[in-house]
Image (cartoon, rainbow, N blue to C red; front, side, top):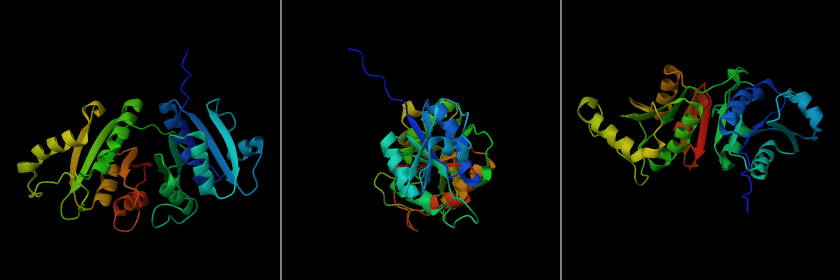
Length: 277
């Protein structure tokens, strides 16, 4: 008996017709190509549009056979989550917010509602990047030594292999870094201000415990920075011209536990992929 063909992955990008929302389209298109996925463009409005009208409003006519446009009525966040479940999405890609000014948390109400409830990786794209083509060359993956952050390495490594991009791991330590009680956390050296004495050996142990050997892509690098994890992640991403920040997340977004993620979402200019683990 011939096995049934494996269904194609699905990448969803919600568009509402605004310029800000369309900033997510080039990133979604590139990720769908990397994944060999069908790109679903989702339009949500109070009155559900017919597909031809949606194509015209969203300006996606002639995008090719790998793109599907569908429309939903009702609450945008609920519709995005329902579509994700219905289509078995592997990735959601959406603008971090629409309109001005940028929300203090970095996310608009719809984007934050999707983040809190989505069961798949979500990529947030700042509207300022516009509609230029996007191709990842450098992926930045912050690691804080916790099992939660380490689980994101598999996703980051797979994306690096599929895109041919370099994967750079970043660990932030020092007085400004956050301390966690998560079991299995790899602690930095006591004398964090003397990297020439203890950091090389610690880095080797950190990599051995955080990265499965099969996950290591070509060109993997690791950097150590000191200070606030969120601020340092944003700084290194800008300095190194990262095209995507990949972050593992434990599902809590309150002021204490979600401080690093909120800082990155509110200040980073490159797209941010959040993987709930």
